Length: 453
Ligand SMILES: *Cc1c(COP(=O)(O)O)cnc(C)c1O
Image (tube, rainbow, N blue to C red; front, side, top):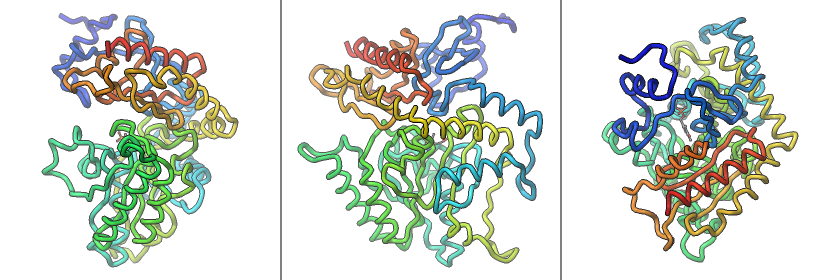
């Protein structure tokens, strides 16, 4: 009989495995070979399990934690807001945190964005963006536009619409028959450049192919959807900003919306407010989420320009109004958490703290340069990744699950690194200290060496 008052890891693990169903998990892998960690508290970059062991959260708890866990300013904002106004429906009602956050986001992102539509999850934001784009063209008398263009290796979430835009086969394969059929364009992933070809030249070649697809199908297409600069779930595939500039120009030429999914890469992760800032472009629809609430509450948003917003204005009954009404849209506590988070983000960017961390991470990665087991070392802002290879430089057979071995080795060293297949990456909170960066990268190198031996 399992006690209700159990107080050690083993008890909670047993109770979990008797009652829960975990995401992205073959449940038979628990607790062996994949351990299950019951966490009872978290502070800053650290998680603490029931038995009191601490782990450095080097992946921001699936890329959401922006300024560490339990940040006092965010916690206070949540507590105050919960006591003041928890939630009110957003149809016919409004409230200061939703208004203030919209003003704040629009101020940060700048022209041409002028409208904010709230969602609770990243995938909901993607659903909203794709419905907005389709409905926009319909309102303009072009209902034949119903297809989307996406990049190979792209990931945009796992609800049916968002999954339709996701190329990563791990997520898509089982559900293929249920999904919309997008047009797939080649990934500009710099690792795919041919021998002797520069990353920029390869990206240019991909842009040329994209242009051909758009030219051939432009009358059927609503939008191109992509993750700017880093295709995260697709294996931390990085590509040059020049590709985004080409994409902006190609989409303009064919009058197709560019939807930037900055749910993972936005809000400071790449060293700037948005990944699009590296290319000095703005998309037609911008999706943000994950870190928006600092990683405390599910909150996401779609930003749109007035030109799209105005296409939805019309007589009552004209069918022009945008219909998407999730229960918790614009919930006040989430907006309050996001406002506090945006204060921290603005300070980190303007005060230079973020630049400092990016530089610090770059030098801490030195042991991975030319390391025999690390191929394709890459960094974009505070995101870094390498691919594990054997002594001959070849990938390991997937069945050996070396990435999983890294995960276990890193946990033993008190660091959470959760490779994507055999791609080892770090995506720490922006608030990570210099000492924690050193600890994280040292553990990464040691865990990789132990797992590849
Ligand atoms: C995580 C993610 C999503 C989905 O966000 P959820 O909040 O998990 O629904 C969409 N796009 C990208 C690029 C992501 O990384």
